[in-house]
Image (cartoon, rainbow, N blue to C red; front, side, top):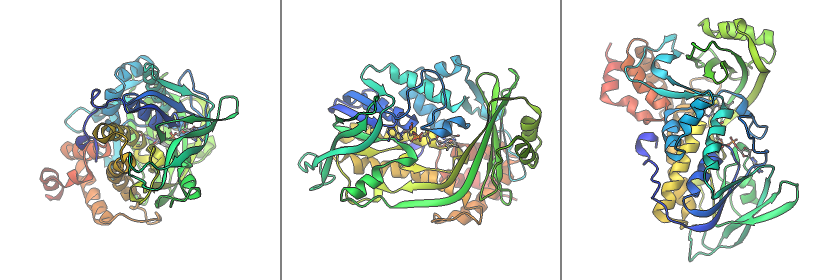
Length: 458
Ligand SMILES: Cc1cc2nc3c(=O)[nH]c(=O)nc-3n(C[C@H](O)[C@H](O)[C@H](O)COP(=O)(O)OP(=O)(O)OC[C@H]3O[C@@H](n4cnc5c(N)ncnc54)[C@H](O)[C@@H]3O)c2cc1C
């Protein structure tokens, strides 16, 4: 499922279902989940191990906040519904709204893609500002409390109440959480529902294993990618973005995104051991190796600002198959990167987090808390599936990529190579391609007759 086939948010769709919900993790997935839970619970408490920043600030608990984040259409549309005024707040704080059809240049398959005919609105800002603008939306909800400096340590449970919720007949129901509070003291908080949004380091799999459940099966696809990010000065009149994804045999990729305070964020990526350097001289040489001069011009010729080079290693895309578990405790669901995290080159994680929240909203509206976990995991599996196919499928264009390859990946990749070559001259094909990458349409939309005909006609 992508944006076109997930129903939009309905503010009147959910009635009150309980006294308190607790969200673990106050990053993008956690804040989006808290937003939809506020419709269903008298009180929502978000527990975050980092202090809650009052200004747009990168956080140690989510180190990727120091790297550029593209906001795809699936997220732009969903966030606009969930947090009215989000776009206005972002622009007031210096974020930009660009038309990606004209102001984003995309170099792939040996040339730039032709401009698509329609506008593609895209917000650009630092990841810290994106998160801050969402947090400001949360702060307007009186029933939601964010508690920083609170570290989740485990779930509280009791024997399952199979009569009320039958997801785990005879098993356990999560009835609350244990955590270390702002002073470091161990404490507990009862809850009717707990949402784990603690990202890739989620403890739920090990907690399940320690409590008599099988952990979720895991699909891992190794890409061994490293990121180096810098910020450089940007004249006020320059608003464009540029993306140069890795393209076999070139294991290097790069992107530059305009952000607030007159800067571009420039990210350089290297796959399969072709590490992006962490020293200035090495990074300039790396940037000069690209087939287009724009990346080197930014890295070598513009003034650097801020913290120097930020590095992030990302060994593997990981998908935890909660949808395949036979037993799962009641009173608990998992969302965002804690379910699946993808090679960030494709910029999809925040969009998936937003779509997960939308699915949680519809799952609560349709059946309340009864069998919530299996119903929710079934639907998130369809979201992850579409994204996984695009991200992991593209990674398998490199022979060194290791892991379970989705069926049909190789012929699909060959078709996409041809599609990209056609898109060098045909903006309508670029349009179709962008809509898949922006998670507006399913990957299968690239096989619609109107696209197929353009790609396959010599
Ligand atoms: C280098 C990089 C670049 C990326 N670029 C993009 C992009 O361009 N576009 C895009 O859409 N996505 C991108 N992503 C993905 C995106 O960052 C995530 O998908 C998004 O942040 C949603 O993640 P999340 O909220 O599920 O988890 P996270 O953002 O990882 O947040 C988890 C939160 O849980 C907290 N936490 C963890 N453990 C505990 C605990 N025990 N107690 C309390 N709190 C805890 C953490 O402090 C953190 O705040 C990128 C990721 C990386 C690594």
